[in-house]
Image (cartoon, rainbow, N blue to C red; front, side, top):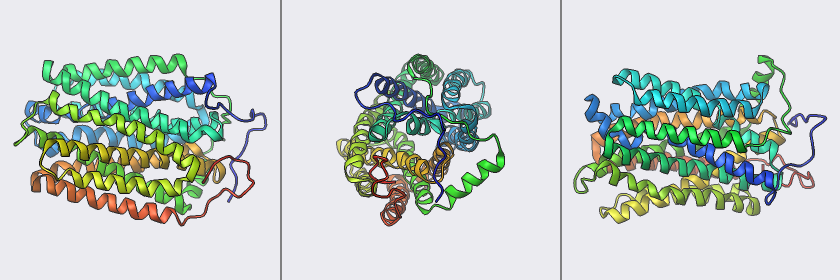
Length: 420
């Protein structure tokens, strides 16, 4: 398979653990991941309130989440290739500031159709960050530190999911859904400023030819790689199941026997730091034992957590969410870095590879996250677990298939990576 093109003037190596540049990258992309997920899922804890306010069903209220992920997924197909031409950092900065502005407009939406349209636009503006983050890390961080840096970024997305939901849920209880969305928008703006100040400029980025034919050739090579295709399928199934659980959980906790308000129900998202820890720890394990060994174990952990949520006591439900969250973020943190690493040493087009992975990721979120409300309406929590369990089992099969795919890294290649 063709090797990725290298820029002739490209500096050797990259930022390593312990260096100032690595710390700046880690903090900046942690904040970027936090902002992205806080803005993306800001309406999730507000679904019962939105259903009441606009007179829509549970399934229809979940469209406020799916509309954003649909816009994001479609825009990723453009943002990744675009970053190969215009550069990584420019696109990341524009994405974060534009997303915060659109989020403020969502808080002012006069009606349900307008809110959905704005959420689609917000998804489009958000795409510039996730489409580029892994490619930036692949280029700017030394190979020996890449999995750890990727885990820290995914950890930021985990905390972003928690902070956005907690902030939205708490403000929603105190002042209504409009103030909740405005509060999350301000959080996103603060993170955008932090990223602008801290993130080092690209040193190793080499622009690709501004040619659609070139981009199509690279995309074709990616889609002919069985490991890349399996990783895309893993993203769709695991993310779809993860979002489905959290979309339906708000309705479960609002009803009997729990009858929790938005703010109190939102406290279940306090399990998200476990996902942050799990993604970072899984990155270290992947550096030591290889990605092929770590991903299937993480998927099994996720499945165990989903099944545990069938228990009645609230404490066991929250424990199940914590276990599921740990398994999901461990698998996602390793898999997303794997996509970029494999493209880097094989087909080239790390930005396109990351975009295709995330397109599948958010397609799964949009389709199966939207189905969660219908499953809840049709059969309550057991129906939701049946849907999610089936998705995770498919993901387990894909992770087993990945163990049999050929590594692109030969002994003595000098890449420093465990597997590709």
